Length: 610
Image (tube, rainbow, N blue to C red; front, side, top):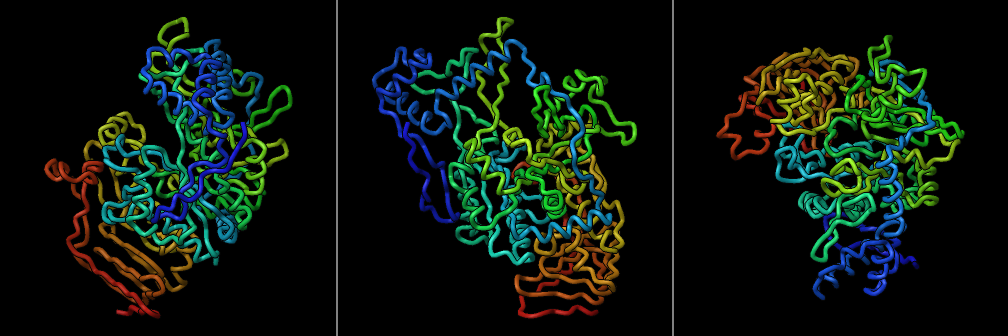
């Protein structure tokens, strides 16, 4: 079929550009669509339809064929091959030998970490950012999109999305970049809500042309091992294809090429509710630049058996070599099939962790190589299928399945000479996602598993902030408030919020705490630093202090002593939770009994010396 450009700006205000996928095939006529269904063995879809239902079916068929890379033909061919392999129990890793890949293990505040972070700060001005934001908050007990949730209960008007935009804008300002672009992949469920979130919040301060929103399409659902499409009444059932589609969209919309033409050297992929990841990105960029990695996976130490994939170097008998994520449920059997790791997914005695670093799905790509590979492959990463069979014949499924793809499989498309590695960081510095509602989190906590809920994400962000201040020379106790909230035990440090406008990384936190800085924070205290705030003398805090410098203004604290009733964390009541989703997701509230606030909107510098 011929290809024609599509996906122009749809003219909506509030975001810079909404692209829905370029280079679609010429749309088939109804007769062509009918012939296509018959040629692919999908005649069951046409049986018993009214004229109107058949018209709708053929219209949908034409649309699906136009949007899928390779069309319906390629999708069905891939599905039949993968379903055959699944039914026959074919091992996708047969012939591969796993070894520990090359990479860098960084310890926060070490000389090497500081070196990498400083190198990364020099590279930030060449970065572009991609957020994979396809999720609703239903599973979390929230009626909205996940990126509209707040990270901090005490800053609940500040959503994850605002934090991410604030980080990018702060990096932009500090690096001297003209503009750091952001692309967001949405789904049918989240697209309109994402547009509205940006429109309602004036793009969170981002400029026209800075944001690109790309809507992911769905793919036909499959009901049996012959790749028969599920559907009835003239409608083909469709399902999400997985976040690997982000690469196809970056290619189809021309966004990757545009970024390269505009000087972007590094592309950073990040997830929707891992609110602390930006603190680590400068160091990770430094590793990418220093090692000239075309792909750099951000990793954490992995506990054997943990439901986190491991980054492996896979060498095939035929000479193929890949450094790529292996999902946790495939890692143990792969390792057991080798002589070197015959015990399977077990700990390295020297570290107590798996020798294979844990993948957290934050990736840094070299833009030049990325664009070249997109052009060669159309950004189509390898697919997989995971059917639930109805019986031992392995022909029919309990429920419809579909082909899926994952963005972290992109290294499988790279040429052999492309350098691929990882950066491993302590978990507290880079990974604390919101995955579970409070009931599921409580059940996980009872089994000593990570709850990964709104409360743990907030606690971990506060721990990170406290650690950054300690590394900058401040005196901050480890523990503050403790309790069990809706079944989830939480020990909070002092409630320290270092907002992105204050600093995005350790290097910049240290820059705000001069040589004469002597910050002392008591265990019951709360501290919020927002904007350009420098500490140059003794600050004694026993209570709550909020310091905000508006854009263009600066606050310098030379001497300050604060003592007030402060803030505390208390369990929320069922009555409060009944009409407050934020409390219902956490099981606690922040009660503000006394606060010292210092605000300055400029111009110039406000000196605090009391």
